[in-house]
Image (cartoon, rainbow, N blue to C red; front, side, top):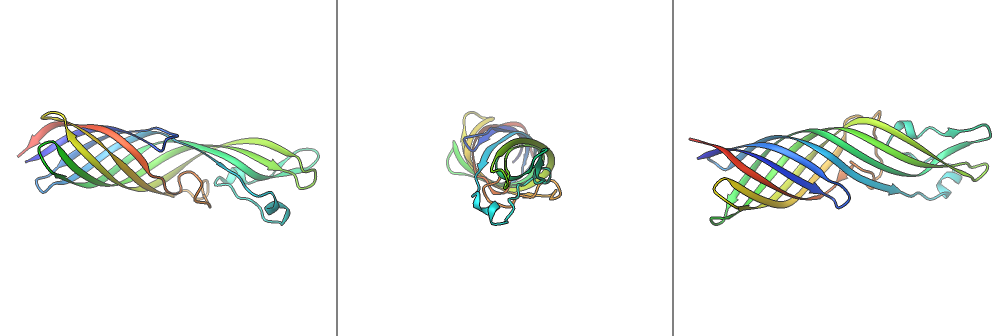
Length: 210
């Protein structure tokens, strides 16, 4: 017998919180169709670069186009060196999954979700002058879009006839869909490549289908 479920979960990389609400349609062959929304933060990263790269004529590129232009004053210009970036996002997701029960209470659920997010990023950059050797500090904000494919695995524990608790791991792979505004170049940047998260949540059966 198929089911219709609603669920919520919270996931984290230990420096952020992401909240997801989703709807699931479970079919007789244990396939799960799902759709949901999410909102939250992605934490922050501090990227430190070698000063000698600038003196050797190699410019340092941040992920954000509006942060790569030199900062100038009446005396000299300053080039990007180190930066701290942070991001928050909201978006939608669609996915397929499969579940298997091994006993009355325990089970395993595996999902593959496609996610699309609107992101607001902030960058705090340190810029250095090659002439005066001084540094200045500048902040930048950017709005852009990213997408990800997320492979997820959960251990499920049935708490009652309708309510299930789950915990597990999400492994999203992020990629930019707006390179003119956001184009990361190092795996340490936020929202670039794999960013695994631990997750806990609940699902509740709202209807059973024949």
